[in-house]
Image (cartoon, rainbow, N blue to C red; front, top):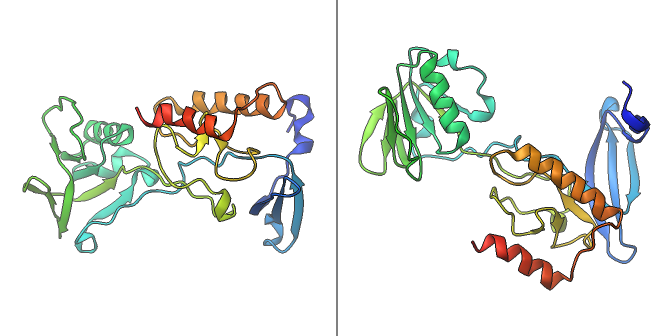
Length: 252
């Protein structure tokens, strides 16, 4: 595979990062890597001045627990594992969640033949649903095929899709360098949504951690910002000033 500017020589394929820690005295990162093709048998330690965590947050599903969930006789899955609406043709479906995935999945499943779609969300979606859709408040309990909601209503369903978002997960990073799992528009541990404030000497960045619409253009911009910062084209202020800047966004 040819890459622009021969970047291929800087990329290590079939490897897995197993640990990242930061030496405060030397101001360097020690990164442990294993050889995925050799069952992780070969360990390599490398040293870096900067680390960018760009693993995203759309791979570790947030799967909430509900009373009686083990009694449900039908299929329960997370939106992460949703493949096609055709699987739910003729079924009474419950979609748990009130954001983009929940709305999209609900509409697709009805379009491809779901018998009915019940939507459970913490806050009203504000949408005017067509016949066949019913919006409910928070799901509180599952009793066999009957699902119960906060307002006392209940309905019977054949399948449940949890469109309940994702968790941040960084098992390869030392705990002191891990961004805490909060799936929000502006993580309060990241200056400009990128530079980690709680460790790593302002040399550790997280790219792609925001939960918002049009995520990927934002992630591209964050990658460019990170590059400019590493090259010295962007200067960052003091820790206190960075914290104040973050609070301008998180306190809104």
